[in-house]
Image (cartoon, rainbow, N blue to C red; front, side, top):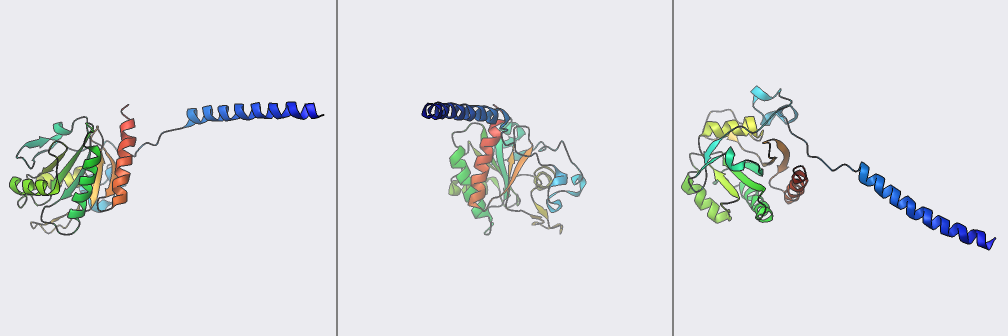
Length: 223
């Protein structure tokens, strides 16, 4: 009888080990990596989207652009070709949410400084005020690395169209004045196909951490 139980004990141990191995194999086979959503105008808060594209449910991409950065250099979509990047809208004289957003963008810059796949792009919503010289002063003050992070100014209509029709990122005050574009705290994560893959609150530290994790997730799509 004792011999039987002894043999049974060894059998149970072997069976347990085999069960763990089998479960691990099935888990590996069935495990699906998290995939970030692709955001479309129809799925985003309508206040942030131009009325002409609010119906659009697929094929949305960031439009071509030509703007000027803090060094007076023309920046186009070609500078972000095959790059993942984080974009936002700000202005240098903002005293409310912009300092927090810029500080948090700087934190992202520190984490991606040696990552050739990832860049940053900040658009001024007051381009008449934010001249190249003004952007340069701001960039130096905020520790902007010119190789990783472009602060851009340019034609207000183009910036407005990018904000409302491409990045789906800002509200429209609609008064036609110099401050008729009400920027928000949004950070947008853009993939290598120029698609929006995430929206984040640029004033929150926890959202910065989420962006960094989502960048890692997104990079897996290209391996």
